[in-house]
Length: 164
Image 1: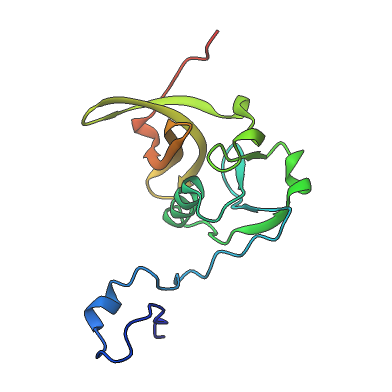
Image 2: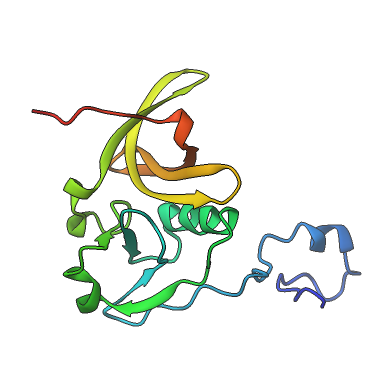
């Protein structure tokens, strides 16, 4: 099966096979992420204790969750669901990156982990279990204007106490 070449080069120039290998615009081998019709969201089921619903296909938390699901050998095919169907469900919450006004922060726990530059704090969005290596979490960190998402192993994370 050959990869589809999508980048447009100058037709007068010869093909540059090295540039084609590193083409960042290639179609994903896992299939494209579906387009979102108005009033719909993306859900990647299987997160514990809940799954997130996303309003953007380019959300960092969504990308991290897809990567983690693939690492954990789970289904990485997102579902397009009507927004009204997911809002009232206990097993779904809005993504704090792309749907911050719909996030139920009582379902999301604060956490801390160590980096080379010192301790870092963030929010643990969900867990997924790798059949071989244990549990992993999607965590977000940063300011509200620029949140980043990453995958962290259960052994690295420490839960923050609830503010009282």
